[in-house]
Length: 345
Ligand code: UFG
Image (cartoon, rainbow, N blue to C red; front, side, top):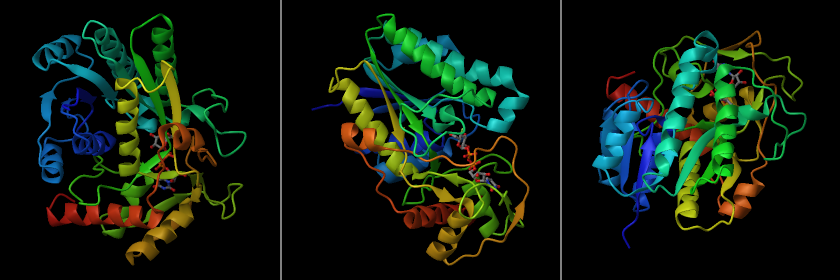
């Protein structure tokens, strides 16, 4: 049976592109909208090389409601939306709060506004473990308290969850699945797509792989005096392909009315906490490549430790993050090597 068309906003970005691959592999026709502010058209070639299909692509900004209206009329029959389109750098959001509130909230409002007139059955929203702030207890469940956001970026995720809840509670005729990601890392095993941040990477893995490649002199480990076994911060690093697969399950769930709930929230993590120093060791042993690093002071705003209790997603979605951290590190390295081969990095 022919599957319904899915709109993926931000579909040329890091998590978006991996999700488009999994959607196409599962037989869903995809249309991507992306303004290419933090990605490039070449990503479409990577997706096509992996899946044998080129997704439909519209270069436009989701804050432009007229562009979205045109998209819905040019591509009829969209039944599901996955909303990745958002600005995502925590530090930048402190400097440019208006940009963050405008991009992240107006995009969501426009999409929600157009769902009912276009008969869209559901929206998957990219949320974040950032909503838990510094948790009182680990692992965190979906019922763990939501803490006051520590950045405008984090606040957009909290407000977005509230907007979706209010709209659904007002009687909107569609469903939503909110996915709270922990730390997505790695790349597609084909090394055709992966994470490609603009400029100097802010996140650990791209900085680490660029250091291993010799592009950066050394990796700074932000703090070794935290209350953790080795003193460095702990996160739950989840493989990006595992993460992408959860979106396909969430879309199916909404489109096939598998749940009586109109709104559902899931943590997407592995359930394992890994420290920064452990992660460096794992990368080195998995790839055989050394990562020069030094301990520096703490980074402002960092959470000491957070990892997921993913049991709700395991049970209800029948999904687990199955990849090993070693394989994930090898995939991140293969992607970095591919960028070098292509003369990009
Ligand atoms: N780190 C270093 N050195 C670096 C970069 C990071 O030691 O050069 C450490 C950080 O201190 C932290 C860990 O590596 O302990 C992970 O840092 P990231 O910047 O990779 O990720 P964060 O956990 O800070 O943030 C990520 C996303 C955010 C999101 C947040 C929670 O980048 O967008 O998870 O969802 F909000």
